[in-house]
Image (cartoon, rainbow, N blue to C red; front, side, top):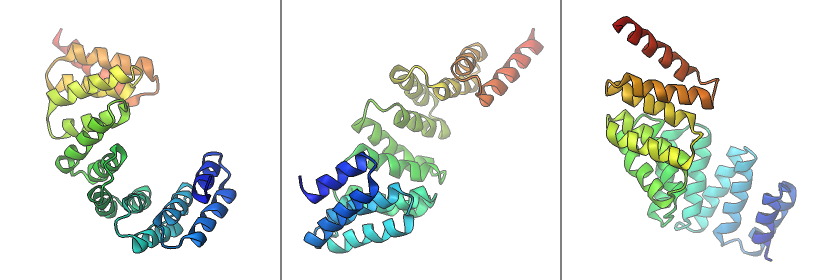
Length: 221
């Protein structure tokens, strides 16, 4: 087991000081190899030391401009500080440099979503779900984005697929309820609001929506 492998194992065991020592050894042994800097950056990011993590990811890029994981790490530094616009470029660069992984597309999609650039977010979130078909949360965020641009049928289909993966996903039920309201289907909406509340009794949005729908139905009777 080399220094990097040992450091990663220590990270997984939450032995962060030991992990740091191994990554320092890896960097000292091979200072022109970007992975030592990337892994040390990941460790610092995990410890919420954003300033030093940024420096290590930038050093990895300086050593190797093709180090896709370094760009991805740098994007995460900015994303975790809610600098979503700043995060977009390194996430895009990570993908351009060959990081064809679901998480890279997902994080780029989220960085557009939280800036409310929903149409820009959709293709990246869609690609994230294609690369990781079993991740309910990625599908849910994709569904939210579709709903924001009024693609209701596709959004509802996506929320249903979320529930197939995770039947306890109360937010998927809530958003299905909202979608049914837009389609003027109050009874179907109510059933999803009820299910959301059953799954999460603290779901205030579902409780509020349920009350409004019941009030509207009462006035019609």
